[in-house]
Every structure is written in structure tokens, then in C-alpha cells.
Length: 109
Length: 109
DNA sequence: TTTTTATATCGTAATATTGCGATGTAATAT
DNA sequence: ATATTACATCGCAATATTACGATATAAAAA
Image (tube, rainbow over the protein chains, first blue to last red):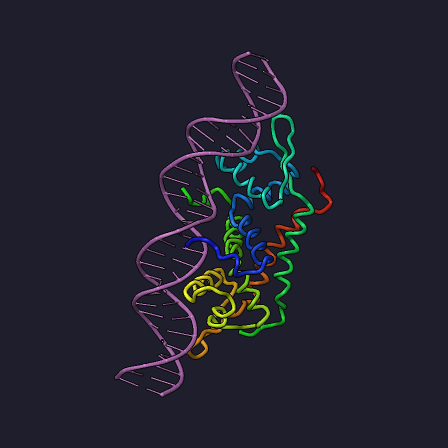
């Protein structure tokens, strides 16, 4: 075992879980927050900012890239990473849909 | 390795990551959605609803309970699980804070 | 009291994640 | 052409997660 039984769940449930997984590491949260405040940066900056090795950060960046939250454009020798506003809004809405599904008025326990 | 270096990050970053980890499994998303729509349920219902073993569901319920998203009250022989509205709103705000930190107007790449 | 019912916990196998050194790659600088 | 700079990828060790059978626990029924 150790493998998630994705066939038991809806496509939407699997997608939200996959996205949540990307948020499920403080380094990736920190990278996103840094991208938000600096409005574009490069891998090197992040090695300074966070205390992780270059290989580790590159790996986290790839995971953020894979679900489309960030995108990178080559800028000479370095790479400029930034948040994809379209995807950002999409992901925001996915979470929003889940959260707003529970009405504050419904108190059972 | 395989252990997250939590000391490198802020308490808030670590907390959000920990919460996101709970959302990072389709079974737990499905459980939450089921609790939202049925507005209270028991473990047995979920074994029927999802196709997972009783032990597995109990384990997922524990993880949801541990970060406070749900709480269970003993109801005779069974347990009534439901969403904690206070914690639900708290978690919603944590995600909201992150998402709203990125202004839609800032398009760099 | 014994049995049944509903759920929790334990132990374990399979797989996934995290972190990093070493190495690869591709553009600029010398 | 060679060196340098900035990342990306590979491979591996340590640890975490997922799933479930087996077993424990605790309340209600017989």
C-alpha cells in the first residue's frame, strides 16, 4: 500500500487534493509568499531567502510549476519565476467552493 | 532525510502547510463534502459511501479531528462526526489571506 | 453475562516525500 | 575555446503516508 485509491473519488476531489498537496509544505508556502511580495524572483534569491540547498528549492519550484501555480521565463543565465494570475484565481476558487459549501448557520453539534 | 525543516519557516507557514496536508487526500476531501451535505454523519455511513476499509476511514477521521476541522460526539454505540464551524472559518481565513495577498492587477510575466 | 455493534488502535507492507551531494546543461563572460 | 554562473536532474538515504487485517474497547441488546 501507500498508494492513494484515486479511482474511488471524483475527479474534482482528486484535483483539489493534488493541489492541496503542493501547499502542504512550508517551503512552498514561503516561496509563494516571496513571489507575491517581490513580484518576480529567481531561484538564487530563494536559496538566500530560505535556508535550503539549491537542489531542494529547484525541486519545490518544479512542483509549483507542475500544477501551474508559477511559471518561469529564462532571463539570460537565470530564470524569472512568477505566479500565474489565471491559475492562482482558479485555485483560489476551488478552495473557495469547498469552504463556502458549509454554511455558517448550520450548527448541529 | 524525509523530514521537513520546520525551523527554517515561520509558525504561520508551518501551520498552513500542516492544514493543507490534511486537505491533501481525496478521501478527506470526500469526508468533508459528505459532512457538509449531510450535516452530521457517522463512521459507518462513510464506509458505505467511500470504498475504503473501516480502519482506513477511522484514520482519516482522526487526522481531520487532530487539526480541529471536525469533532465527534458519542451517540449511543456510534459516533456523530460533524464540522466545527469556528475552526472551519479560521482555516478558510488562513487560505483566504494567502490567496488575497496576490493582487490580480500585478502581471509581471 | 454473553453477544452484537460501532469505532479506535496496532502493526506492517507498499509507496511517497524530503533533502542534498554530485553531475548535467545552457547561456554569458573571459 | 574555456571558465563561470544559474539552474535542472539524478540517485540515494531518511522519514512520512496510505491502506488494511487483526485486535482492542465500550456501549447496547439478548
